[in-house]
Image (cartoon, rainbow, N blue to C red; front, side):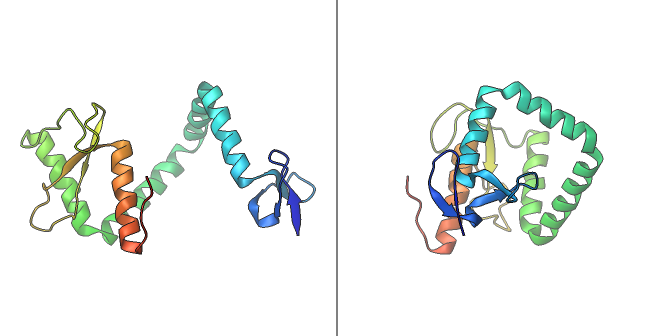
Amino acid sequence: MLKTCAKCKLQKDRSFFGNNKSRKDGKNPYCKECKNLLTKEYRHKFPERDRLTYSKSYAKNKHKMRDRHKINSNNWRKLYPSAAKAHVAVRMALISGDLIVPSICHRCQKELKLYAHHPNYGYNEPLNIIWLCRSCHNFVHQEEKNVNRGTQVII
């Protein structure tokens, strides 16, 4: 069954529309793609409202959110013990001063907040890391996922 998006005016299958119980047909008036664009525009236009909404939500549900984070962290540590050990090793080396965060990203050479990236979580080399800004770190992880899937990243 087809539905017309209120923004792009294209007819799409109902699976392309998110659920909305308050609507007569049970679906959002905008397709998921348009809804994402509208949400990004709204958040860019009114950043203080977005922060306020998150702050209120966090204040109301902080115990649930903390519990969920704790469970997810514990599950991750169980699934990836060598990665968890490598993260702890980096944290301890930073605290002791054995490891110092450089000022520029290894990949793009920009001066931004940097994150430690373990190219292979080597069992014998937990401090074998490169320092990347957030966007480069995300890009490298996406590239690694695509290599594992046998696809390529298009820049």
